[in-house]
Image (tube, rainbow, N blue to C red; front, side, top):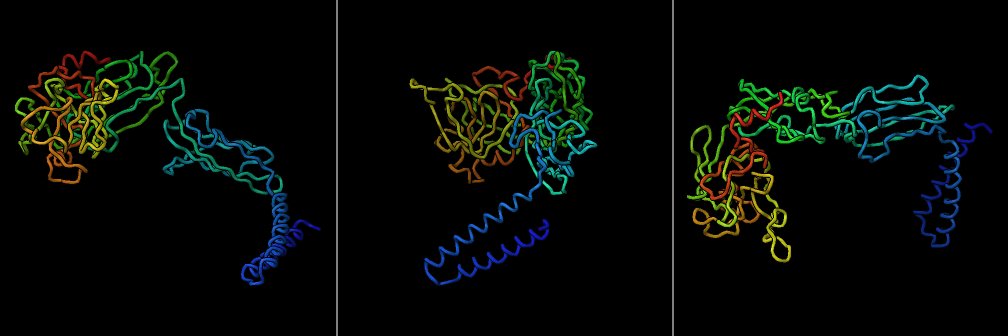
Length: 417
């Protein structure tokens, strides 16, 4: 019997058996009849499954890296190969659907991307191959790239397309220690539509911030260009990034907290728009002085004293508030300006916190008229908050995005351009 005749026979048998199943499902013949039909159907279906398996393609597709991998190389990890057949189609895309061009070997045995992949990007591969009888096989995989040992990247802020406050520096944190800082800094350019001169400052071997002498001009556009592909940042460690990022600078808003008077004055484009009573750090735990930049915003967040060194005799946090409203980070070490619903009668009257700046608010962060909510809604990441008249020292420039606490001479002295 030919293959085609055998397949037609199997299809007819399957259709017939399918009809038996439908009739038995609708029958009211009782348990005995139902069991007999089911057993017959199961045996016949197994024969159909075996026949289908016997007719499957012999082509065996292998995709590297394996599905779900999270440590794939950006240079040579991605590859599709086939045994007992030839690849007929390979489609590779990013998770966002952007296509990745590739090269198929002349003999159809393998496929690989035509160029370098991006770091920290999720890719999907769908491959099709045919065996000697033309029967198709399919395989797919998804993986995420990370940094190979012989390359470095710079994780930067702010994000492309974002709108930020006038105090937002361009801050780049490299995932490897940079020993040739000049070579790397020469591959980084930051310009502003305002024409302000922008200079970089190395805080250490892995962090480079760039800013103008004074705050960015409100309404300007800033462009960051990373031309680091092939730049040797350390012995045998090369850059891989080649991209351009732009962000907008919003209105000029600077808020000044006076820890002595316990008031905060909010100015926008040089005009005072609001004065808000506050509660700063207690005499035992005063708030840092200095110019601080909002680096994160959270409508609600948990604050546990243990994470910043405030613990009791049992090692537990002196406080653990799981729903702090309208919190905005001012330092890496844990200084926030945030809403406070648990303090009664303290705003404008007493400094009671562990170093944060508190504003009156409500539990649940759902009252837009509360001072904490108003300030949150009217603030951007990159806005400046200045604290003065606190008994504490001035915050260190690298504790957060707070390089504005250095003089311009100090700042430019840390440049390697």
